[in-house]
Amino acid sequence: MRAVCAQAALNPRYFYESFEDIDALLVAVYDHVAAQLAQAISVAPIRAAKSSLDAARRGMEAIVRFIDEDRRRARVLYVEALGNEALARHRLAMDRAAVVSLEEQAIEAAGAWPQGERVSQVGAAMLIGGISGVLRDWIDGRIAVTRDQLVDDLAELSLALGETTEKIARRRARSKK
Image (cartoon, rainbow, N blue to C red; front, side, top):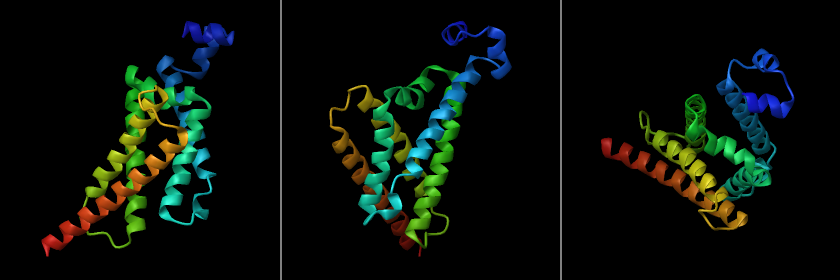
């Protein structure tokens, strides 16, 4: 907190007028960057895509471009929560909300979904967690591919996971009959 106040040339009293503690500041920074990412995705021309793969690629391009243009964003979204308990709890809650949203979108896109089948939760959780891990490793240089290759790979693998998830759900529904 002292370092933040010194960097901002603020009296600590002003810090505490805005934040309960350093954890609250970290959560606020995370939420700010996450909102910026959501905005970057929302303005991507996904609806103009000519195919599912094109749509996935446009979405992944927005995400990868966002973190690549300022890699501090990736640290906030994918790294800093590993070392702060309050931020880790908050990020887990945000990830869970993203999983629920992705699952709902996938079921809607699939049309008639087998009643009671929840493999979509597993697929959505794998996708959200997997993308986060891949982006963290790419930013840290542990995955040595170009930005375009990363976008292409994430798009194709995301689609493959979605298609496989749907196949599992339909196969299970058939076997119950």
